[in-house]
Length: 127
Image (cartoon, rainbow, N blue to C red):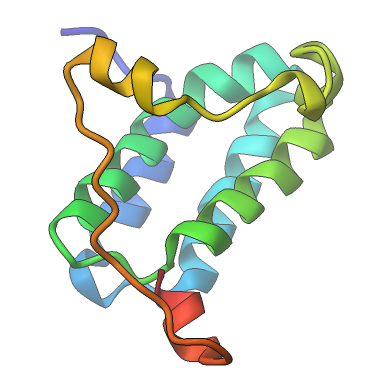
């Protein structure tokens, strides 16, 4: 098992301690801490982001996430831009979502079971 940096540990603890009662503001603060702790180095930011990103996916898959998929990833993209990761990774145009065949190659089915009613902002935020 690898050791966490002090900044990564601080973010993981402050986010994880909230449990299912975490609010989007806490998540955004955790991301902002990572931006600051990275010192503007996008490589450091991405390495430190892993545990926070994984934790969100665990909570989302368990139906416990307090920040929906679209807003979660929008917040990540904003922080990517803040540390220059969008340019460092070839620009956001260079970052493409996985295709269904790629998911199949990974052994992970692409099954999105959530749906959003037309015009329902609350459902969209949860998604």
